[in-house]
Image 1 (cartoon, rainbow, N blue to C red):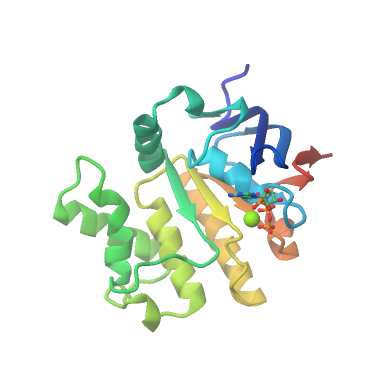
Image 2: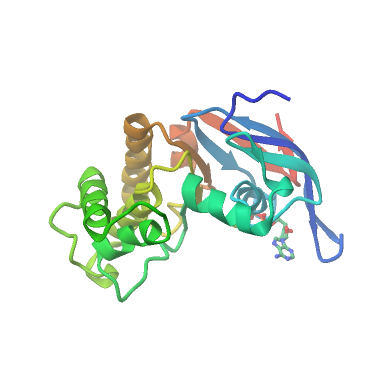
Length: 225
Ligand SMILES: Nc1ncnc2c1ncn2[C@@H]1O[C@H](COP(=O)(O)OP(=O)(O)OP(=O)(O)O)[C@@H](O)[C@H]1O
Ligand SMILES: [Mg+2]
């Protein structure tokens, strides 16, 4: 086993419904630090399942997932949660911002459960990240006062504020029009360049696929060459 990648997936299998649905049928994947990788493939091919396993939200039936040198299925659920909080940022298709909080408060949220932050340093980190994603001046707006693209930028800031090693984005442009989606992908790439965070994006969007540096295609739970 090599240990150079930020994520290593080795022979992972995952079934649902008591084995009736074989979502992943032996997947191997090595994700280098700072990768910008798109996970493409038809609906039901296992993209979200793979992201959930890498994110430690679920465990494989067999095989292993290693994140920053730590094998997730050897960790207790509590240890996995801690690793996820510190090392992994999530971005979703529906943005998943908290509607009653401002942009700044949404970005501060992941820091509230991490040790070592004061109110002041949380706010400073959130404002800095909002500036980096181009939302300076909008810190006090709630999500419903922001466009879809702006909401996804807040979500990107929220994913990055704790400086994770990896960001997992499940169809991050699916709810955006073409132009806005492209701008959001460009932003993620720029953030990767500035912060060195590895991005793994699942997508159906040809424009996202075009902008990926590494393309992995899943078909029927296997990586297609
Ligand atoms: N919690 C679950 N319970 C039962 N079956 C599931 C569950 N999650 C996923 N599946 C099944 O596993 C297979 C892979 O699903 P997955 O969501 O990973 O695909 P996907 O590539 O993300 O698809 P899409 O592009 O539509 O998002 C599908 O057949 C799906 O129906
Ligand atoms: Mg999916």
